[in-house]
Image (tube, rainbow, N blue to C red; front, side, top):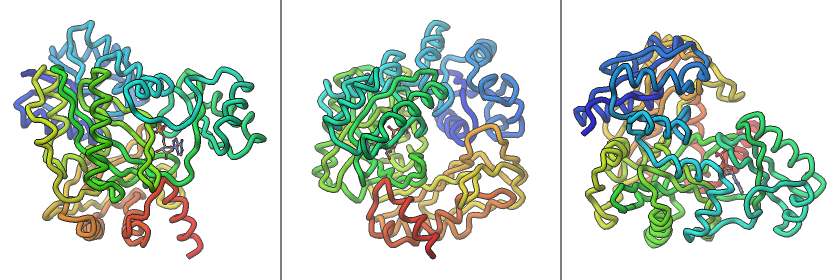
Amino acid sequence: MFKKILIANRGEIACRIIWACRELGIETVAIYSEADSDSLHVRFADDAVCIGPPPSGQSYLHIPAVISAAEIKNVDAIHPGYGFLAENAHFAEVCEACNIKFIGPTPAAIRTMGDKAQAKKAMKEAGLPLLPGSEGVVETIEDAIAIANNIGYPVIVKASAGGGGRGMRIVRNSSELSSAYQTARHEAGAAFNDPSVYIEKYLENPRHIEFQILGDTHGNVVHLGERECSIQRRHQKLIEEAPSALLNQEVRNRVGGLVAKACQEIGYVSAGTIELLFDNDCNFYFMEMNTRIQVEHPVTEMITGIDLVQAQIRIANGEPLGFSQEDVRFNGHSIECRINAEHPEKFTPSPGLITAFNLPGGPGVRIDTAAYLGYTVPPNYDSMVGKLIVHSSSRQMAIARMKRALDVMIIEGIKTTIPLHRRIMDSQDFISGNLSTRFMETFLAQQKAG
Ligand code: ADP
């Protein structure tokens, strides 16, 4: 097994990886920017290296600084977490060239899946259904018009290199297409340094349901069921749960089996997520694949009892999975609320000093956070300060548990999404499982109307 792992990340996920390593008896090295010297990941790792000033381009994203830290500390492997360098194929290659194991899939898999147009092609060949749309990148506005006319409006123009909900434009009729195409290209060029876009059919009220998969270097691939991620704002997830109220065991086994087979076909190794859109009749379509550990991985851990971060580490170490699809059992229901440091109505970031702090506990409550009383949330990074996760016997009991946990969760001095989550837990649509990616839009409009 690895002796020492460098964690190329910060915040709650860096702590999460430290816990996984500690249980496996692996030493940890944290890296941090000058904005993060008071962070818990720095305090709790066995060793830590400051790698640069606050802007992530000069620290967490700066490959030479990360690799130098790894070499100075003589680590065997790097865990990238999510975000930052997690889906950077070049970084994975540099690790390999430096004889440091990258804990994740191969650079080739990261590259293919990082280009959404290419990913769709690969997954179609591997047997997953796609939404009608362009075959690959749309090079000209004339092509865009022809494709949109062919599939019918509404359509969505999406950045091939996209992520985080950026570079996406919904187009309801032909008069909007030209400007949407140009803006999406422009946004994609600015955000991802790649203006390529593709077009697909826009589904009006779909559910975002994703399947967790694990593949080892011996050709074994299993799926660990689905996560319902339809509660989103600006295409960003806010609440996730497992299992989805939409799927019964037959659909779960069928779709999960198809997804695992597709991943086996492309030789996928490590943890990965296949994101699908579902309509209410359980028709489903491949949307994209994420080649990293996800923010919402805990809900899957809660219902399967499988530690996904430890599984990633063991797989990177060359170990076989050690269990088969038949061994995977789903137990109860889990919900995760993302606690963001942001204004609950305006959704603008709210960094600053935490002046009062209380975390809920008790049966079935898990908190993944790097925040504490007296911690100052820096303005430089993602606004998520933690995740509140609950597990119980049924969806109804999980909601009750989440409500009682949120009631005693206190983070003051900054604004957070805690009050918003309390209101969502009381919403009739949420309680009845009546979800779609438009949920928040409707919910916020209803709240406004009082
Ligand atoms: P990103 O990588 O930027 O997060 P995704 O491809 O995962 O982008 O899409 C993010 C979200 O956008 C989805 O969860 C869904 O809510 C919405 N979306 C994307 N494609 C479509 C589509 N074809 N129809 C309806 N909604 C879509």
